[in-house]
Length: 605
Image 1 (cartoon, rainbow, N blue to C red):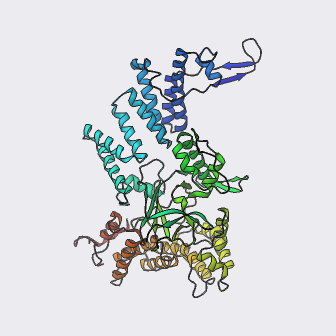
Image 2: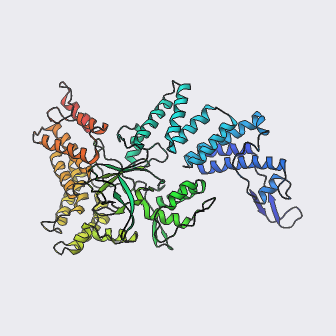
Image 3: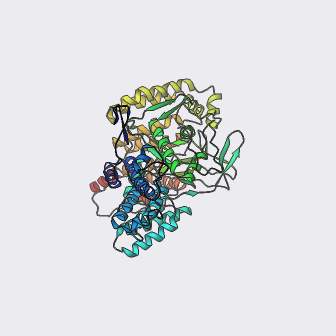
């Protein structure tokens, strides 16, 4: 660091030098920044401290160039590595104080690197710390954590088992060993999406977990191929049944906007709009690419529009092309969608004020778009899962939706054009060629709903909001032909009506509207199946309707087909909440002596 002044020692112009802090002082600065949550600044402070110690040792061995002191080297901006070389410091490490300082710098920087997602750097640092202090339990614990994050599960499990033997009373160590065993099962395709810790459950509900343990990567019966007129795409490698897990993919990056409301930045050169969370995603990707060449190769495998990736063949150190990364995020970012749970609270109005989240998943980005996809995607933390929602034949293309099928034709067309293609799916072609439906009026109504009606309804109680929503639905119905096979635009409205009726404890009407929403979604959205099921359960608490039993059983079968959840803890817990009079297979009942009011209270909670 230096301060440029107007006068030097002789009264003329020059540079007033400010001495670089000692390594111990830089370590203290890093510790302070770490406590403040300023992990980037902490990382730099620890790196400067290690570089400072390297520089002092190099100067002792052989003054670099014609420069006499370490400070002169710093002023000359000669790069000094911040990597620890045990051979360079072999003699110095005989001093316990120097060894303790090196250990603290390496261990602390490993912790910060992990917080920043730089897991390979974290592993390098923690292994260096173990060179300074062989067998140190704290460093071994950190190494086991980093290996787990890198999905090097066999190595991680051996370390957790070793630590468990040394610390048999440490529940966290045993818990991590069990978690790694689950990850190893998941890597083989065996998942239980509801056997998660409460911490992970919260992350799943939020749709993002920046830095927590997630599911293992898994690739199901799919393969990436070249598809005529589309480029790369994903097809079924053999026949696939509805509900099959096709992919579980850990994110390259997940970033949340720091602002309550999402902002948009204009990239004039690319004629693109980039949200605040996408800008943060770009920054994090660039940071990790500089640290990890293998990670950089995965980023360069993404589609980036007409931006060509830099030449990386034979490069000792891969370059980082900021323009490529920015365009790749624009074309490949997804918004996480949490796994639907029967026990989730009643839907609320759309929360426009929540921080926006964007993520990039390298394998998931290989899927092409359809407004009527044959899959659904969900997320838990940084893991994104893609399930089949229909039976898929071998060789058939597997698609995801880049935009909601409930949106108007005009909006969907606009979104697809931003990605550089024109959608020719069955829904778009039907709406473009069917004169009997008033597509233009429907688009105008939906625009008014989004920009004017919905924001006003957010300020109203459920009682006052009900009538305007019903009136709007009546208007929307007039834009459809009597035999229209597609009514996706009604889904959000019917969903909202179901929520309003559920809040008013009118469960029969809630069930009707959730059922209509499920049908309007084409029977491919298990979220509504779950909501119908819950409405039946809640309604049975107040007034038992025996006719509900067959519908409940059908919905359980549908849930089972869509998500293979029958063995999942969430579904089992929900079945146990069903009133004793509702006879469905595998469902437990309440205690015969349980108080009716208490039963209803527990159900609603």
